[in-house]
Image (cartoon, rainbow, N blue to C red; front, side, top):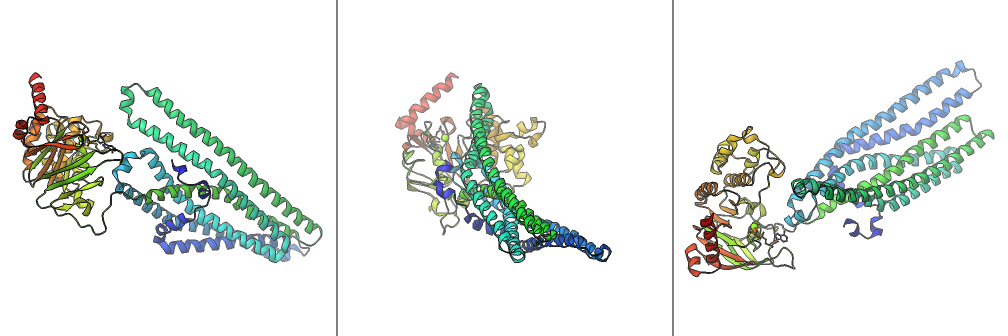
Length: 597
Ligand SMILES: Nc1ncnc2c1ncn2[C@@H]1O[C@H](COP(=O)(O)OP(=O)(O)OP(=O)(O)O)[C@@H](O)[C@H]1O
Ligand SMILES: [Mg+2]
């Protein structure tokens, strides 16, 4: 749970460090940033000058002198007033336009960084994460940047600048009292807003969490659409979703009520300050110490200050939210992948393709050991098969060979190079796999096959399709190889998916090949056809084949029999039969079944 990770008092702090982390992403367009900041100052100077012109217009209109004489002056002032207003708005617009590009580039770069980082993280993270919540975090984080930039730099900054200017001007022209009231009101307002907003943060967090949870649940449920149908569990699913939505609803309510308290308090402070300013100004005018123009000026300044201040409360709130969202994103970036290249890692050099497991001990969690003391060698160009009961750790061998996890003890070497001492990219480039469960991208059949080697030539792709016996299937499809395979490839049959995986592996053609139950979903006839194709491929390649059906691996140079994470027997088919152990029993059982069917 995210909320438990930080103690509450730390959470209440406005996290400015995030801005520091964000800066490198903004620094790409330095000139633009400076230009935008200059526009900001220009716009504010224009807006602070406005009330003065207004004052002079009013005072001139109020003079007893003949109006014709000063009409020219008044007109000039009015034109200047209009021009300044225009300048104020225009500078603001230019500033936004200039800065928009900086923000968008930062969003793009951060989005990409997070995406790349997610792909670098270990399998463990991805198996435990919740895709729905993760995508929400990413979305909120990047839009948080946009918000932060727009409002931080262009609302809080300018507003503070304007307040400073106005307080200075009031003090200089009208003395202590007016300046003090404005300043005090501003300070009380800001302190109140920040306190109240911090108090509200926990409600915002609750809301985000409820939002994530409901979303995760919905996505998970929809991803498992078929399962839901099979088990008639629509009601169960919608009830569960509704529990999530109910939490969300309650969180929203608390959120809204606390917002009401905040907004009410702010409005009260503003009303109090404005009333006292105007009352004092009216009093001074009545006493003859101020002109009507001065009254108008004080009014204009007060409005000018409190209008953006009103906004400041909202902005602080939102910025705080944005910072939290961005922080979540950076927390994601701070996650260190468990599997990392060592700084001095070189690319692996695979010439012969010998695989060696030396006393490998491994468990996904410390509490449960999956592999104990596994040692074996696959000599270059040979074919080694692994058989054994379900859950004995066969697929785990493959995941370790790909270095999805690091070992607790022991060593895995390819051509004498320990796989944890070479770069992961080069390691994986040298191994091809037909996995136990093939999941496809929601794209065309053709693109899914090409995925094995994106730069493969058309000829190679067609050959792979033929070798994997997909050509007859494709010929039957109305859209041919442009057929969409559906989410995760669910529109294909199990055997078809498996053949796509085989075509991909054929296309990649690395020196080492791994087949994890590669033909388990095929009928015996297709299986035989593909096996003969694979046999051709295996020539000159080192291959590791995991199989349940022993008939598919009788020709292996060596067969390893696994039981409970250990290799209990090994040798070729004839030797294992002669040994009359576990393998021989398994063989006889399968032969009997086959002759029956
Ligand atoms: N990511 C994981 N986290 C924790 N335990 C896991 C994980 N992956 C697999 N296991 C456990 O490790 C054990 C070995 O799994 P593995 O996939 O290697 O079995 P297998 O021999 O390939 O079985 P099958 O023939 O059914 O495919 C299983 O008991 C499984 O529950
Ligand atoms: Mg398996």
